[in-house]
Length: 362
Image 1 (cartoon, helix red, strand yellow):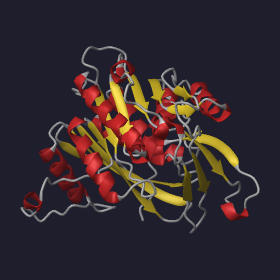
Image 2 (cartoon, rainbow, N blue to C red):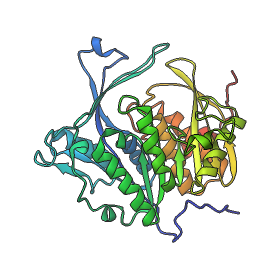
Image 3 (cartoon, rainbow, N blue to C red):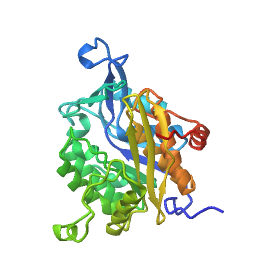
């Protein structure tokens, strides 16, 4: 007997997904080299929202990505990569020099960690095409027409005022049109301050159905609310089940519009070996996934693979415990793939991994 899933389209139509964000050029020194040692770089493309669109498209979801890229070889190459992975890019704007004076594609450099040395990201994305584009007269209603799921993150609004307005307008319009909205706070300290991120992301919460990650957000509207309990504004990085359930309950009490909250928990044994598990609040219950321990080829995009795995499982009406295990297994597989995206088109391989009896106790 199938369980009731409030996140499935009410009209029974095909599930159509759209996400909005920046796609960037990624430059990586080969063979775990540091940037100061490198004489060559491996080029690829990625970005949180683009990674999720790519992963879902590979799993068979009708997936669309919206962004602004420069109308040059770099911008076209980034779009071509997404299209080669079955992502619809029709809404993507190829901007001219008149529309975005700096006319550039954002870039980031990745030093891949090894052993005790962690990975390191250096951004070069200021004044990129999406941050310079004026969205004041852009038709958001038409952009979202025909879709039933919108995914957004806290990275895009961190890029500048134009992007903040765009994301807030999109999230409000999506709720007017009845779309399911998922949102991942995805705090990036190189892009904005903790206080800026927390204030903005908290404004988004009343419009969110599926919350991925649990910070940065305010749970209290004022100091009086905060003083009424012992629970503090902050969440353990590696919580117990009881601690995590308490956090989830505070979110749901304050924001009853939330239908699902999920977060993954990472245990870093070294730069090359991690363990992952996750917690999820859904339908009044808190679920804890199994623990996966694995070696890392490329960690970037692991959180996006978790998000895309969870969205896919929800769209396909998995049982709640299978939703969260499928999401973690998707992230684990991404750690074995070079590049930002989880280019995995075999759903059964993810199911096989999530059902393997190999948990390592530490």
